[in-house]
Amino acid sequence: MKPHRGTLILVLGILGLVICGPRGIAAWIMGNADLKEMDSGAMDPSGRSTTNAGKICGMIATILMILSVLAMIAIFAIFGLGAIGAATHR
Image (cartoon, rainbow, N blue to C red; front, side, top):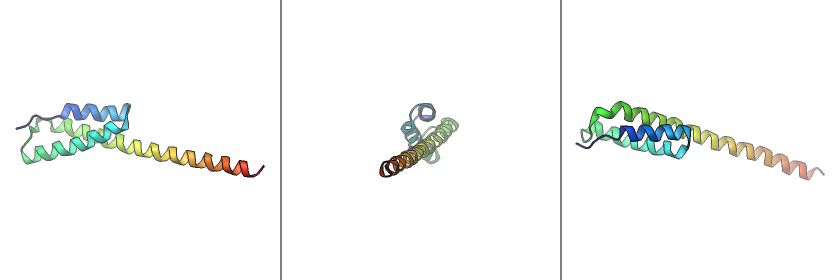
């Protein structure tokens, strides 16, 4: 039976929330893979709760990263269109 990576996944999920969103994607993907292996009996299930917590943190970090990117695109589009409009009304 393979050892679980629950602590690593949790750390990546927390780092995704605090510092860098792409680490949240890694936590989400690794968490899904490890939970599937735990369900099939190929991985030590003692780290299930830690792995699941890391996966959830990774999901939240990924969603927040996507929302912030969309907000930045919207802000740049609004200010960009405002600058173009101001330049054409001279």
